[in-house]
Length: 179
Image 1: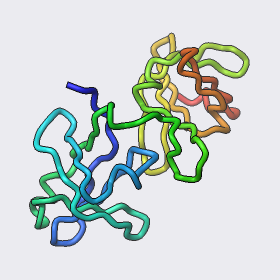
Image 2: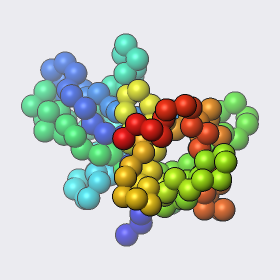
Image 3: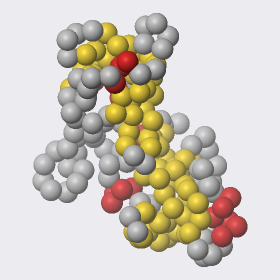
Image 4: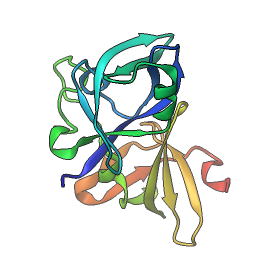
């Protein structure tokens, strides 16, 4: 069985005809959530085929084949939508369609990387990527057993180097003092 990559999470139903909101976990929603796309469910279960997709008030709404009422949509709440890793393409592909490669990484490529500060101090290792509506956070488990949550933005994480097995964190004052 191929490795699964989570590309979204089904949120609450929208309306009475089976549409659901989607918490996007991919940088390329215009590729992943098109009509006809077949998405798996993390851990197995019947695949879902997208039969409708549109944006409403800044949220992606999807309709899946066979999910035709609010009750059926509610039953899908919380399901993690996946694709097979071999369908993902390279994370350095032209993700936004502007002709230039974009820096992006799969979660699986970041977990386990050594995290160091710009001064060379070891913070620990990336243990998880937390996807939230406000932005992504890197969970970094420290050598002392503590954990730091670091906003995954270029100003704070200027270097991501999976081949070298590390990320570099340039923490603003106080970020690492809060536990």
